[in-house]
Image 1 (cartoon, one colour):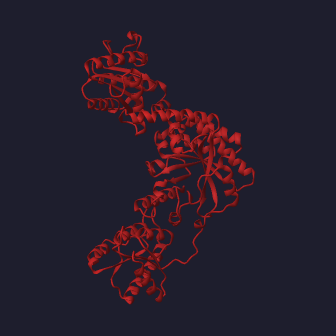
Image 2 (tube, helix red, strand yellow):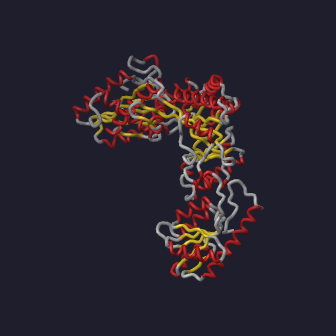
Image 3 (cartoon, rainbow, N blue to C red):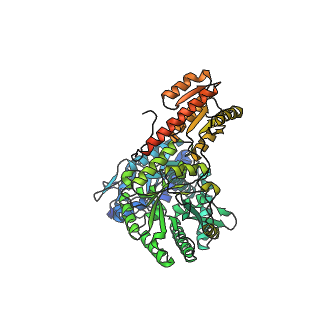
Length: 601
């Protein structure tokens, strides 16, 4: 800061602040910062030392202003300015760069590692204690970018630019962290700048299009709603993935006009489908976290509904868990206002965030969308399957609908249907398509063959053995005794079949490449607890199999080579036990989230 006298918060008293200092915080302003940094570069050049530039941007500070008002925001900025000044050494420069961004220049460092330590100390100074202003206790964190002379630049412009680029990378890495500048970041920043410029032009010149992906009710097999998804048809690069341009739109504020346009386009298109006499459906539109924080969201929604003529009940807003959790009280109030207007609310990406019942019961939502990351391996991963069952139990206990997104296979569909999910969305039904293609899909009402309920007879036994001759031999034995058996050559193939068909008995070899029989039995116990599991194994594996029986993974075992009568008698006993379990389950009412069948009991 130099030789000026400061008050208790480390800032210059207003009556003695000279030119070159920020009027709010008393820190150096941008012009004085550049002058001091130029002097620091000259000094580092003469002394052959390192000069470090730290660019600190407060995380989510716009939310603070929205929640508490700009007066509280200004008080917080003054407090944090004082903390940074107190953390700096004599001769260091602390400046307010713009808005909620500060820059600290530190001279005469001998090693680069020292810059990292200083960055962490600045971070601690910001976030160690919440800021208390007007009875509000506000937790504040900062993302910090670091550039150094001469490694990252030799001019004021380059050092400031590179520190800011590194700061943006820190924000993208999860915020509340430090990040050093690299040349790779510079290339990314240039590409990002070009993408931002082209995205602005795309919005102005209507290069964006809305695609629609259907959602299907499992009870009826009919399309009941669609999700509106924005796509960018670039004149030179073709179709650009949303994963590439949506983050840029979020960071630059372009997400707000973009979302407004998608909302209006999707509502107008849905009303046009209704007017054309197509089956009525609900349109779902994603609302970004940034736009959800704005107080005028309800006004925008009302204006769009009035201008397009779409009834509120046919619009559903999809909002992520993380957007709601940034300010629970504000989110609850806004959701109630939106619900009163008649629109539906769906909680998107459910399961990836807080997923707390205590929070969920406060929000007036209509549906939960199980995130695709749990659906992708739901037929083979007991953790994903357990989360899917827990989400379903929680939702239905609150009388909410449940949608599974990212459904791509018939086995996923069959498993979700048996669990009791209400709707699905994913490539199995359809990829996102333009409006004209969706119109045909809606008019035809046709769905993939795998979507229909299977009418084929469910086999009695699933044989799992990588030796096809052995599997065929057992099938012949069972056929002679009136038992229908199907075969799988691996554990993975068996799990796919079990997801599609409720096969009563699993008969598996133990020694198989990849997944062993015992590993398969343990998985089936978690995923399909009503399927009775038998192990067929060599004498050398008897001890291992007995351990599996003791832990409940295996019902009984048969040794190789088997005796036909004994094998069939064991399977017949397993089928009788399975029927007994099925009758027992019919008379049991499980508590929410509770497994009703456990062989260990």
